[in-house]
Image (cartoon, rainbow over all chains, first blue to last red; front, side, top):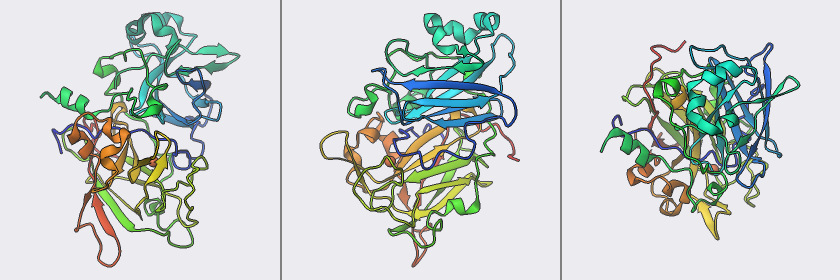
Length: 157
Length: 231
Ligand SMILES: [Fe+2]
């Protein structure tokens, strides 16, 4: 099998909701953490009610199925900066209509200096703002737009 | 052909209009490429809090009675891109029942639910990277992609591997299914050899006499398995 390349991806489809969630799946840490809330939106600006978001931060992992309004949420701890790289979370988006997952990153709004020097945000160019969450009274708001105006920056897998 | 072009020819694009749901969900902007050491080699998380019980690998024993349908054994190895086993990694599966109906409440296909079948399973790979599930063969089901569209019988698979880039969600198909050549989701994979990689092989060695048909399907994850031993 080696040398034949990896097994191809296929969509998660619409019917994973009875299988992929697990108890406390949206909570990557048991103690204090940052609460993140967002909405997954399609190219018409409509909510994606059958998406699955995963967040990876070091050894922490959380998973959230979007609700009928496309809303997802997590509790995760904020990582430290790593060299020139500003603190960030790695996010994967899965959904019906996505033949492969999409990869994006969430950066923190209170890290202006670190974000200004971050090389991945630099590569994102003038769309870098889509990768920085907004502070809404202690909750971090991070919407993901799959397509169209304000389209979120996604990274090559 | 270089490894890179082979890999790309094996992966479906995001926009594939024959699969209608991609049209409003595929990004239009080009994806941003990050140096691989920033992204691909990030170690995977500890997903030990995803509960995996021994009985989760046998989908025919999760209820009081046995589900209807053709009992099957699904097994294979999870390998890294060098062909080395990926040990102790989480494998999640989900599927329709033998009539082609998912337990999921959003599935409205008028085929019967089976009170003895949920259709979700989990296991961890062993020291050889092997997984094994006992289940029933899922039925084909209609979907509204176009007039008279039917998905070939399939089992959904989700795998982690050892790093961020090895995360894979895919589907496994059954050999000889007449719906395979007309499925837009499978056809989105450009190279026919890539499509063949998603079709399991009937295996007489895996098959157990008087009990269940056996299918073998190996999975290759991206990247090298850097983890020497899993705790
Ligand atoms: Fe399916």
